[in-house]
Length: 312
Image (cartoon, rainbow, N blue to C red; front, side, top):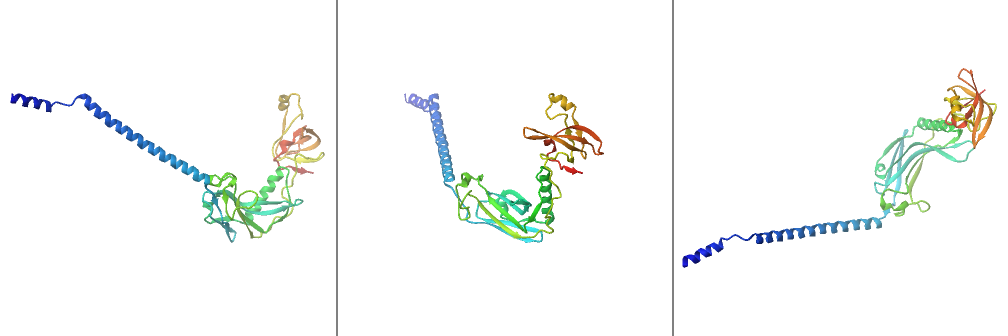
């Protein structure tokens, strides 16, 4: 009997656990892991949400303070050294220009021609930049402007030229940094303009007379292509279409009959016709050798941008 009991005891102690018990333990551990992962993920999301709210709140409440915005200049020979001393953030957008002003004959307004201009950032201009203020450079830029304006019929003669060059820098409205607010509404400080637009700016005038200032008559006489004179002859500076009519009944046929006045050729104005505020000229046209091309009509818009020359 004793042996039987031992055998039975041994048999019970070595019996493996049931499959259902193993599954219960495994499921319990998985459940605990899932809950742990959910809690961890929830904690991370909550933390990120708190950071986002904090950032938005801080951004909304943030302001930009500017108590200093001063240009630093030095001229050596024909070179201007220019930099900015300011407490504005480095990413602040600024407009930079170095120019010289002049007056036109018959006009009291002041105009200017740039030596240099660019859109940049405060960070870039905290270090020195060297800009050429050579007289030849400015006079060349003025000449280009006179030529361009004369082509538009807006040529001008120079009455006087300033003996100073002007360095200017401004931090305009609508900065990309949200801390400035809409139209710099959150920009404050001693250097901020007290009236008008909320901008920060500085301007310095430097005595620097121009060598042989080109005062006087423009080298590009202005002829307004919208106001040509009847009876006057003009030379064109680019190929110009000569139409058979200003208001053709058959536009396609008119285009087929169109002739061209070559560059260097010209025309004599015989009459004018106003078509909805746009002048057309009836002309007698000729080529470079003064050989007759024929009569026809020129649309004044075809003369815009040309350097027309009166021919006597």
